[in-house]
Length: 394
Image (cartoon, rainbow, N blue to C red):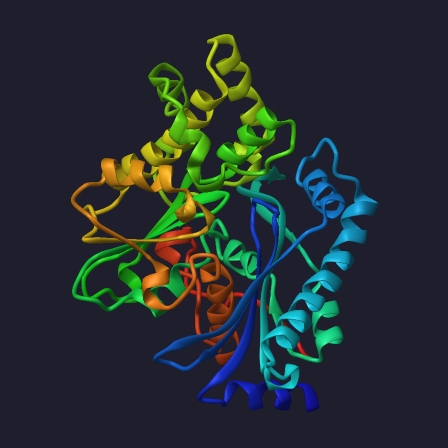
């Protein structure tokens, strides 16, 4: 067949040029990374973020809430985001002077609008489910590039939670080292990948910890009347005082106590949770800066406690990535909570903290097209290793 021979041709390459696409729980925009990947190395060539227009972002956020999501809009914006993702790749290539036809493959995470890893009963069976939009057929057609997308469902079919997805990529990028490492992503959700010394794939420990920037961003928007999307550099938090009573109430959230494998998202820590915390803080008479300081401490404390409870040991190195790594107040709180670990960022390894997730999906797509298992069953809870991702030929 012509299709399968085209895929075999891509898979046979020792070096592939792959565009990785990511849109996270913060729903800020499309991250695009162009990466040259071999079995031994991933070399980042170009990266940029293409913010969503405010109106589109608002529509996506409505799709993430069951009470406001409409079936026709889910259908419509699945294709809208396919167009947006495709244009983002083309824009980055034009800006970076990378020929579009030099890209072998696209790896797209899509935009998660609902994720239910605990599952729901259907007859006598509990069915787990997830939904990412950003139609990959549109991406493949508009760019003329074979596209790999929709990674989570295959892991769920194998009994896993479909998350976290990036531990395989973390292992490729940072594993097999003399030091134990924690790759700490602080996006909308905070998730960690722990790689013990001289790590093998079966040794990986990873899970979603809880909120990263999501609650901080939600509170900042509430305080500012939607004028500010996030606490830039942690400046508001730096001016406030942590309210220990409110902090301790938040730290009793049941998700934080659950043992891995576990994953979470906007369903547990989205705007409803932020509204609840904001109301409690107002009842306690807290100043705006104190509220931001307290929810920032919530993220730092939940990360440190998860390390103590669920990791085999405190890592020698913590490698930060995600937008939260640019929040200086949050990073300083983490340093105080975990003083014995050396703290750095993916920037120190040649990968921008903002690009790390998009690079990870390029690596996952590389594994998919090679036919390599790219989930980590010990992390997601899957019954066996599987090849995640659906391939849409150009």
